[in-house]
Amino acid sequence: MDNGLAIANERHSRNISYSNRTPSSISQAPTSTTEAAAVPIPPTPSSTTTANPLSPTKPLAVRPESRSLLLPSAATTKDLSFLLHPSNFHKISQTDIPPPFCSTPAAPGTPLPVLHREGHYYRAALLAASSLITDSNLGPKQIFELLYVRLASLTLINQTPLAGKESLALIDIHSPFYLSDDTGECILPWELRVLAVRLQALEAGDAKRGVQGYFDLAVYARMRIKDSSDAEVKGLWKDRLRDLGIRVGNALVETGDLEAGKRHFESLANATANAEEKKRLSSWVAILCLLMGDLEAARAWTSSGDDDREGGETATEFLPPTKNDMLTPLLAMASGYYETAVSEWRALLDSPHAVLAKQNLAVCLLYTGHLPETTHLLSQLIASNNAFHALTFNLATVYELSMDNSRERKMQLAERVAEVLRRDRDEVEGRRMERGNADFKL
Image (cartoon, rainbow, N blue to C red):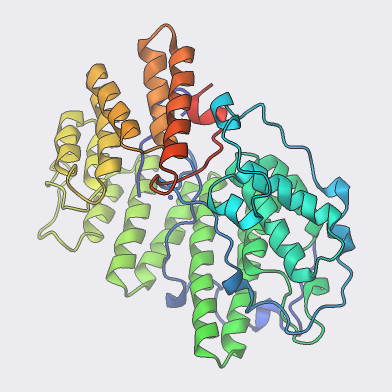
């Protein structure tokens, strides 16, 4: 919600050709089998009041070791110069980065992997584009890795619309052009293909195109599973197929079709035999039910995913949360039982989810009229080296509600977070050295 608080929780037309296979040769839906059980939701900062992943988040990672399995063994002779044209890359504005974060530069000459690892995504994006434009000795592997770093870094500094425009340089990632003449495999790194599907769909203003793109990738993944005789490679593609199943659900939610997203995650939860994955997927279904206002269904999925409890839960009673249960207090809040939710959040303060529990406790206390305690708890989290988006956004909202000089206090908050990141960059969860104005409602 634009002026509310964020509850944190643990979320062109084209012709497609895949070598000599077609989608009709696949006997099952790409993401609808037990092979498509859940993996963690891909991280993206947001609140549970919109299209919500779950916080705190981790940065997109560059993993060359997983890409090497996808690149052809021999150097490709394809002309990739169209990806290096300067007009593909746009100027990045720093006007939406608070001044405290503009004064934390990386050392001159810092290598790109170090910039990315330390969270200097603005500088990583600049260096990646510069290398693509000026380095005449780049091979296909280096070109694709630099392009991925550029697009991922733009996404991580809240420049997703710009990343969407630049992703169009790839044109059709499913085109036969990107298939190796020697092996028939796609020469694009998997991470780049997955990222490009979402960015190109956003740029086209058609989220359903992203759903179709993920299904197209799932068809390709199934072919690789079927064709491979190497157990390690086969396992890698199965993991990627599971990940695509989650991304399809996220894309459906992004379209605003919560019902379709709920049904998709329900099918994944019912298909998996892994108890831990079933519990995680059930929790996502429950959250979607809460967003849709279906409290009865949310209660049912909360109970179905909890193996630590005995007996059922009625529509009017709330059982004490188990040590790792974040859904019960959320359900209490959605039902308007804020005092009950306060007690349940407090019960989770010594759990592995203590940081999120304290953040959500602060929000719940605000709804019960305890504004000073809300401010105190959120400030405590900042002082304890926490700096994820929902936390800074909520504290900025509290400043707006309680102070006349809220902009000054929000700027001070940005300075505190920048200092925390500079001082303890190896210990802060969800580390990003450049934060945007939206994180502090500036």
